[in-house]
Amino acid sequence: MSDPARLRVSNEELATVREAMRELGRLLEQLEEGQLEKVVLTQRNQMRAVLITVERYSELERDVA
Image 1 (cartoon, helix red, strand yellow):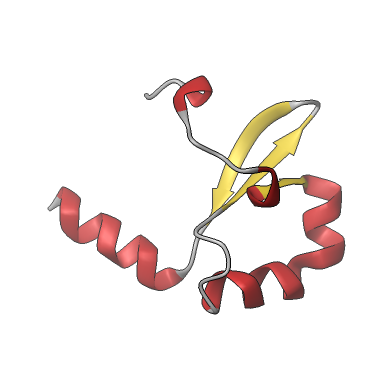
Image 2: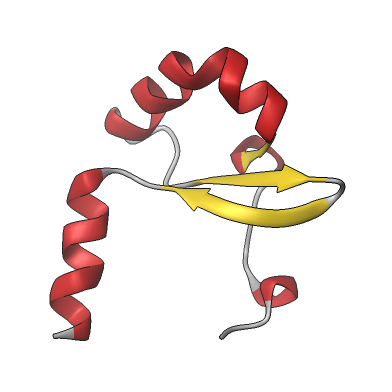
């Protein structure tokens, strides 16, 4: 597993879980329009998960195979 401290994340790409729940539609729109590459979800000041588009996920899956 990679070290989360090494991830490159801009302030725009960070969202708390609570913010993401409120703003999910807007975040998805920004991801799909290419305004954001990813959204890193935080909880209790720790990175917990990353939200990406299905297309980006498919690219990552192809790279692994």
